[in-house]
Image 1: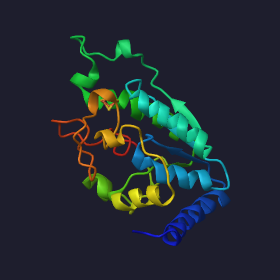
Image 2: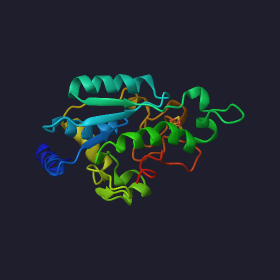
Image 3: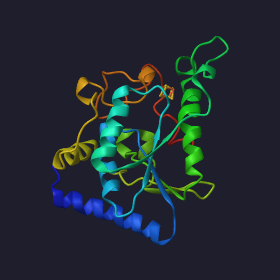
Image 4: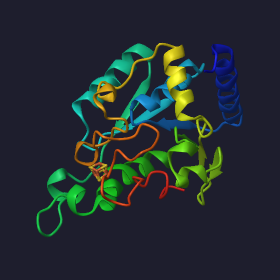
Length: 223
Ligand code: SF4
């Protein structure tokens, strides 16, 4: 288990990187899905000496517990959260047979509800921080801590080399809360139609069960 001094050093590195961006006059935004695994990054950003806006993508299909958890964290950590939603109403998120895209075309559903709204925000800022980790998937393992997109926008992944164990050690060390559904067997908590409860906490198999899909597109399309 890492001790507080070791975590302090890692947090210091992240804050120094943020200072470097700030000194260059670069604007910064973060995003979070407000899961248990999101907490260390949110805690680290909350401790930074300048407020950093955290984007929460409200697909309209999230668990009520996720909204409650977000509100709890805003109160307890003093976060600055910005909620973004798709411009396309749910009534228009169905295929020609009237089946919701979350049941007929999950890639398109994620594109409408996550990728487009996040892309809109991303274009307003120079740096986009997200909490992706290399141990979550092969796709994420191929990422670099800092990546520049074709349009010059920068993605910063401060948690990239943190392991799942470090995440939970950090939560324990700083006595931080867990998502209300965490102990009910939901380890990767996204939208209700696409989340199952039997997930192995070491990976993201808790979503899109039965499909080869492992990413919502935020970290594969917005590069
Ligand atoms: S996770 Fe499921 S419900 Fe949520 S946006 Fe993606 S496909 Fe739609």
